[in-house]
Length: 306
Ligand code: HEC
Ligand code: HEC
Image (cartoon, rainbow, N blue to C red; front, side, top):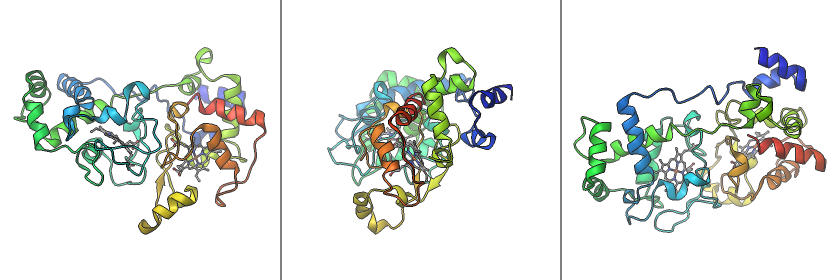
């Protein structure tokens, strides 16, 4: 708690807001030491993640949408499946994804990674990867992959969707991102938040903007689901009208400076547009406020150090 009192002295943020922000440090939530079998599962999962044999036309993999050298996103408004069909939603980053209470933009029922992975493998409307038994057979023909499978899952006799999902989950659970914000909370001043980002943090937790009311906890989002309808653009609402009210997960803001475009349908191209949206008065349920140009820069600096 020494760190906390120091932060309070430095930033003079209200105590309850700092608590709401979530003091858990990403750096301390490391994946933990893995046993030998687990390490083999992670290795197999990493290979499968980028393996185009997971897709029906052998041209697409998890890494086509969650690109490892691009913060595990595709930078498209909405994702595009293996056969060129548009999905309805923006591709989220997988960095720190295993810390989410549930997976996906709207489905709070999917609470383990392996179950989530079956969606992109098997979804057919539209097809994301189109995994089917032919793909399992292709994987089994690969001697190296077969040997790794036997080390990772000693009781297994063949590749199948369950085993592939479990290996992928072992890998996805290792994906972590730590930032200036984590180092700030760890009192590493030299590598923590800049002075400008600290001013942005004060705005983020202020009564005026109330960002922290929804974006809180270690991911600055995730656990809490607002009534999604409130934040949806009219366009998206129209498309979804047949589904009724849609609860949207408050997105994680970790690495958010690198994961444009934004929102469930990727409708906002950059962070200044997101701030403009929050000040637009478009959504009556949100607090009404406007930021000076300097304040906007400060808040952006904070978001970019998350
Ligand atoms: C066609 C692009 C595409 C492919 C291929 C794809 N994903 Fe995704 N992924 C998405 C989209 C879009 C979402 C959001 C889905 C939703 O909420 O409806 C998502 C969500 C996720 C999530 C949930 C993240 C969170 O924060 O809740 C995980 C985990 C994930 N994908 C892992 C994978 C794995 C593993 C594979 C390979 C088997 C894969 N994805 C293949 C586009 C893709
Ligand atoms: C009422 C709850 C709520 C409040 C208050 C709130 N947000 Fe959000 N935020 C959300 C939800 C829900 C979404 C996803 C909306 C969508 O996809 O249409 C979102 C999306 C975002 C995104 C885009 C993330 C991504 O990966 O697409 C950013 C950035 C963001 N909010 C920052 C802020 C900031 C900064 C504030 C304060 C000015 C704020 N939010 C206030 C609930 C909230």
